Length: 166
Image 1: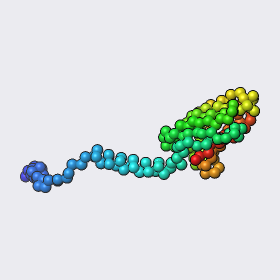
Image 2: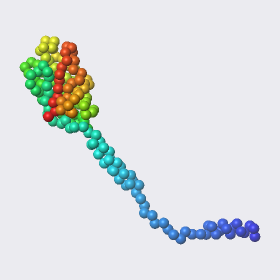
Image 3: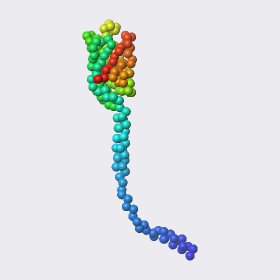
């Protein structure tokens, strides 16, 4: 009898059937993940848009303290706060020419990478002065004008190269 009792208990456990079925709908986890990613992308894009600086696209004025008049410089947007820039100011045999890319790094700084060429008759008998690489333009008036920060040319004179945003 003692041996039959454990066998009876085992049979009763295995003979029980589930009478209720669970009808939970199948969930497509890929769709849920995609919808979460879309929502996150919208949030991230709105954050990035609020961080963007003033749009500098367009044609602006380029001046040099040793060249009479104003030249033109154009900014073409290539990315978020990034521009392809080119322009020149010329009067007689004196000129300054700027070609390269620029990125607005703060509300007061414009980081330029490219080439600044100039020939000023009063500097080194008008010898061509070329500066390649990274230069900084900074503003003190809220972005209305950007002045070349590293302004000493190869002849040892300080240049006032200024971009006036219009």
